[in-house]
Length: 358
DNA sequence: TACTCGTGGAG
DNA sequence: TCTCCAAGAGT
Image 1 (cartoon, chains in turn orange, purple, red):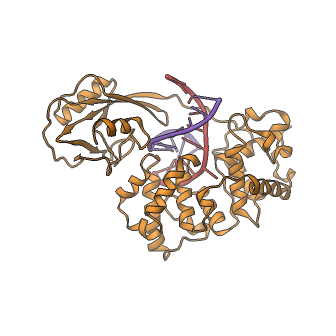
Image 2 (cartoon, chains in turn yellow, purple, blue):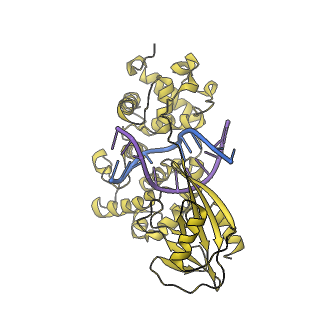
Image 3 (cartoon, chains in turn orange, cyan, brown):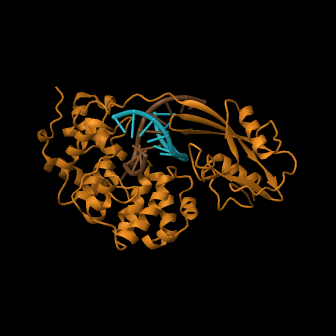
């Protein structure tokens, strides 16, 4: 019979096992070498729904360029977005800048160290608040993220969807009851580290786990059955066409308006959706008054939530006229632009940089 | 509450 | 090639 009663676990044993393991096996990460609340705050914003390995280069570059609250608060949004290019969830970048402005304007230049105040900051929710307070200020607040949910679901055999409703509440109360009051920051990081490096979604490395003796799923051989994730929505395919329009060594880019469903306010090669590529292409030709080749230069596949996007890039015939429309711009380099589906690591961007914009 | 927002890595 | 999902927040 599954027990989900936190009182069946000795918090002291849990803390000792976890902290000892963390001390020995934790990864060497840059934000573990600083006590600066700003740097820790930046790392937490970047780490939302994003793996450590992906964040690393962004974190280093971001702090070098914008080392403190003041420089971030005063930076242009374009600059912050450029530093975020390719990291995804761009609202985080805008919120981070707004957070810096709030810290300066509302909190005297110092990140607040209490739960109620830090939650007022844009982009800070329950997880980030607990993480920053415990790691930067050693305040005894728990965290619950995807890693913690996975570890708890296995150790305590928690059934059902833990990402919302009563299951989520249960996870938070467990995290609170188990938290090490002396070392909350290390405890929280240890729990997440365990999920990230041992308690994998697939093929968890149970023999390396400090909680093995406490893990109900492992004892029953049910690791693969937990966590119990809600079934995923079917993905819809969206054909998209984009145009590569060159003139005198420059390329036409477009700022996506607020009406777009994704990547609002981001720069791209002019693009459109359609039921078919041909339809998308005709829309573009009409709105920009140009003629495009029917053979694409390149195709990129991309997935945004339950949308499967296929973006084809078509070259434009002849020499198009210059245009001045507000959301269009000729650029000679992509250094100042953000290109959807063509992020820093994207194939399309690499292709364009090599073939077209040198 | 449930949906939306990006991208890359792993199996 | 396809599916899953990650140091979540905003609405």
